[in-house]
Image (cartoon, rainbow, N blue to C red):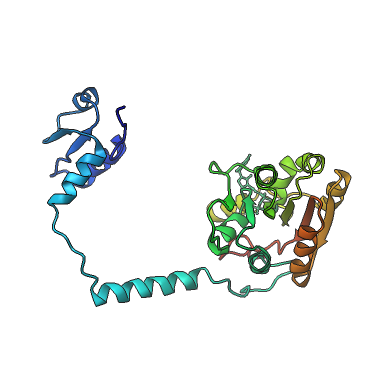
Length: 280
Ligand SMILES: Cc1ncc(C[n+]2csc(CCOP(=O)(O)OP(=O)(O)O)c2C)c(N)n1
Ligand SMILES: [Mg+2]
């Protein structure tokens, strides 16, 4: 069987050509047709990419020396990284729950086996930066950034892995797209916890409006919805958290309740992203 592996794409080659016009890249192709279809390279090699790279590596000088400077630089980089993923105190305390507190509680409640399924929205930036995952296959996220993904993904994960605690994290906009799936969770006894970070707006889009079109806010405000009540109407348990101090105990209660549940967290509406707040 012919293995079809590529070293780079045509756009990689074009980019290379643009940045280094005086150098002709070596083009490697697994098939003759592909090779001759492109403009003629200086050196053309038809080969399997793995075989070719191994052969090329053999021609390079070996450098296995870990210099003291390199080790010190690695340590420095690691420290900077650790600092970057340490949850800080909210810079300006606002009304409602700050995202830092949600992340801190989530980090405390979620064990290494907990599966977290994320929706798309501004809160996702906080999860990707601060939540630590130590086991493979414990994070489920929408590769295409589709809102509404978090809860159904959590239900799927729970059905596939019933022994693992599963928490979905969504914004109010995203959960409203697929909240009806809580009924599916109830029917299939998929006991997930849907954590909803409710800022009564499409916070992500508002952030883009603030950045690119200041003073021209349109269509990003959402109404105040009693999501916990909607959850109970669908047969799940519903909780509302207004105070950071109740976050952890509510998450634990929901995980241990043995029923699908939704926790509506009333967020600090002015906190738009990890670094940005609304000026108002
Ligand atoms: C299906 C779908 N529609 C629209 C978008 C564009 N979009 C990305 S984030 C976002 C707003 C998300 O709002 P919310 O879920 O409340 O999260 P927040 O940004 O407020 O934290 C929108 C409309 C998308 N990603 N997916
Ligand atoms: Mg929102």
